[in-house]
Image: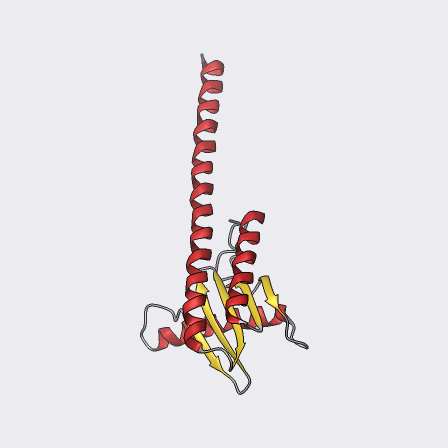
Length: 169
């Protein structure tokens, strides 16, 4: 993970190529199950990571930024209401298209655009299952990165100690 920008509220997220492809595959499966119009996976800073599907005339990069802003706004609403936990999912019902948005851990979101032929219950169930898989994917790689970092730190410490012993006698 990169160092957070002091001007942003959330950490900047960095996914490995393997994570990206695994998440992308999970989104392909979810889109197929739901027959969704569009899936958008992004981070809470508004950066689009990947998407599945298209809506003519829609800039998906702008949509990702607006979705992240939606989470920021509802976090402030939750504070005003005296709630400590932010809202984890949002649902916007339209006349032809509906938007279901859920956080994926603290750093990411998944948005599903679907029409009236798909029930909200199906969207909730299948999206929750995909989010569980994606969250596990992200957490597993973070644990591996921490373990690798600890190994490197231990090796570096040993290397420095040996060199200092040689120099200082």
